[in-house]
Image 1: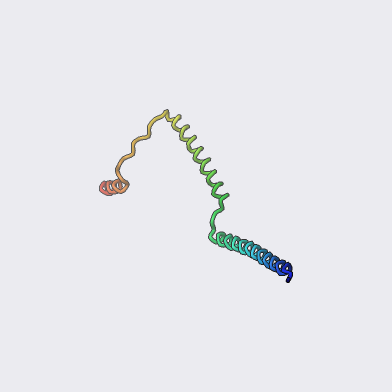
Image 2: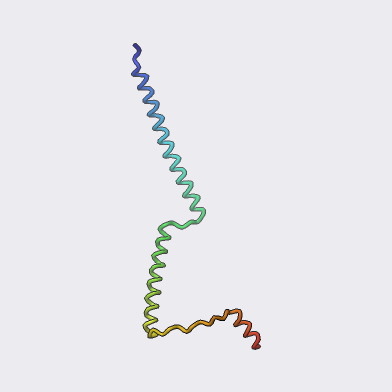
Length: 101
């Protein structure tokens, strides 16, 4: 009977080499795509996540400061209400000013 062990060993080595090659190829393609996408996004001048979070923190701080100043102003005013705004549009005010001249 023919010894099939060397044939199977060769097939296993070939299959192992093919799997290793495919794994290496996959990693290389993934790396290349990441580099290309990063270069593409850099050309689009997009902001990073860190920049967005930094700006969000600044906006929150400004809002808190604005609220604090508003409450201080209300305390200084003694809780006086703002005068009611007129319902007339700026365009109607311009027409009245022209008619007076």
